Image 1: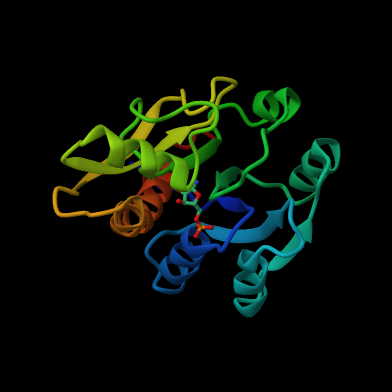
Image 2: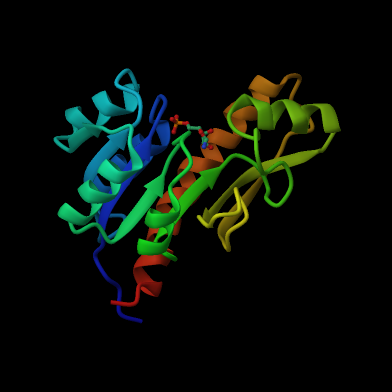
Length: 191
Ligand code: GRF
């Protein structure tokens, strides 16, 4: 199977630990693709500092029309949502159909959908008494957290005493599966 090197844009809103996992993986030639730009809707996102330290161009964009223009100008092949908390517009979903992926901190379809992001997810899992949780990389569609699942991995949480403990365990899984999802997208990419 021919692999392709993809021009990647990573969209962030928070601390950027998933972005950092991708930056580190790229440095280790874990995948062929290259993170060309990092975009946040929040100027104070620490993820922007991580990108700058890695020599990656960063942008703060609030409007979806500006976002679409920037993606096209940079000839982006693949969009990675890594803790990005804004809804992507219909235009961008159409323009990049099957070429937007998101990392979600639960075993979708469980604990997905509107309002299910960040610690909210882990609180719901903790209250459910589930013995395992995990993370999912999925394609982004107009159904929140509803797109085709690309990769998923589980972790035992039976010893976790709080939602925060679950979050810590799941974040490690996120970092593992996101870089692997990039490799899967490289082999599936249809030029
Ligand atoms: C992660 O938990 C991710 O699953 C969710 O938002 C969080 C982002 O964390 N989408 P970070 O900014 O990558 O550290």
